[in-house]
Length: 636
Ligand code: ADP
Ligand code: ZN
Image (cartoon, rainbow, N blue to C red; front, side, top):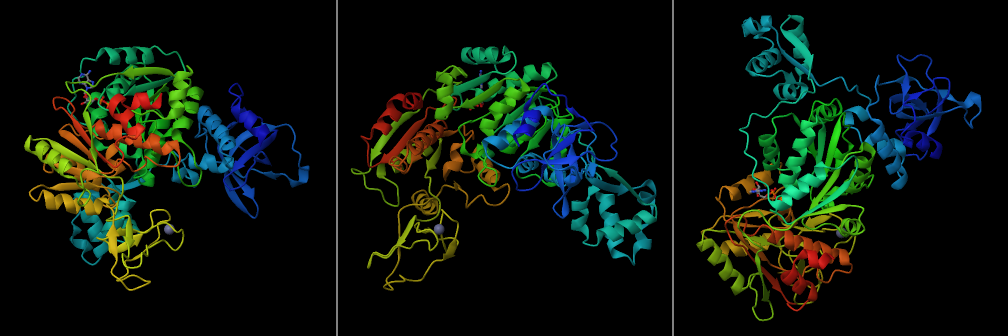
């Protein structure tokens, strides 16, 4: 393992491997270490680091990657097997990416073959050819002018013909699958008549047809930040520290503009929830260039196309969520990680990497500047800025007229909450709605109630697998464990004494009802994982808010990230104590981040903002610091 890593890690090493030597191959298998092979009998071109190969492994064959070579193996000659074939003329993983992945495999103690595999789109991991775009089909001139009546007896052919005639663009397998499950045979029959042309999708991305924007005049802070980043020579790490609405994205755009002017690509990482159509549109308005998107919602074909566009240089900007950190770049110029503190940069399954941490490695390997943006930087990043490893750039104030929001605490000991809502909060909501503002209500607990209990005997319903309390989801009629995900139907009565079960505490589902009862003439948009399961649902909901069809917006953590609600003037935090007493200071950090992020929504531009926090502990030092000094004070 270590010898190979040395080869792949040394930046000066030639990418071309000696065909006479022993090849080291990282095999796509859950085993640590790399394996020795002899070179294949024949090769088309030179053997290069990072090329995919097919090798005999155990009783079968596997995909693998060339990661090094050496003069001799520790294995006896007769036990060495040969590489069967080399799959790529040019390596798919450029040297910088290969080095980062070798490092990551050591750092995260993860088999190298698996790490390399995780960096590639599924199609390539399965051995497909990068040059092969997705197949697509269209009607030939003959097929277009033919009389479909002769297909009367072949209904599948008739349907395919009609579909292809109706399509403006060539159809893919997925398109045709919808038309007929028998499409392959029907298509072959049509092709036999000479009616079909076949091709492969190219990686070229379209340029959006959107009216360009007019860039604003930068604030003094923004000018400073842009100048420093653009002056960086090679790798340098910047922390762009600015509250939401302070113009961080504008800074990114200016730095990307400089990269574009130098004919360089920019890689922009955003948290899962930050990759909204609005964000993409903002980039498209500014830059009439091909932009590749990489996120988990893509089909295999789309992902391969975006990957290829990044690697062949046809995409000038690559925007994506955490796995975009593996996008190969032909002519890299800049790496940005927006909202660098966001937990969605951490991959939680399989190989658990942090895309933010990998971004630091990647930018160093690429020799380009890295910008980490946040209103609430993680403590590691703040530490790196203090020690001078990162250059800290501060955007001290918001753009536009609004100052910091006014923060007030509502003491739950003095004001009883009914269904989670106190009179002062209800009054504030009414006041802001009457003044034409929008209201955002934050409660980071989904479901109807966090506890279902029997008041008669005190029995509380718990998860059978992990002892956590089961959360009541009334709409679905289920009890759900938010730890392990197990669910079961709500029992009709207490399993111990047959008494009546009562929901205790507030979840978003219950709060939505309470708000609907208090404000019957208002439409309410609830945003949490339960209401946004369907694809596109979160956008539909947010759009209704942006268009002011709904004026009350409520939900969980999902609301605190990256969204811009210019007309929200009040943020209500139902339970400020959630997290105050977490066992670790991380939870306090996260709490503070959430509050300031939410508060950052209140009162942008010309509307002054207000934040109300309901708490049982108005003297808690963390809350006091938050309301008097803001997040910067808390974190220093
Ligand atoms: P952030 O990314 O920090 O949330 P944005 O860059 O999205 O901030 O800026 C917030 C809003 O202010 C956006 O609507 C943006 O167009 C606008 N904005 C940014 N910089 C300026 C500026 N210098 N002058 C006027 N408006 C600006
Ligand atoms: Zn459980």
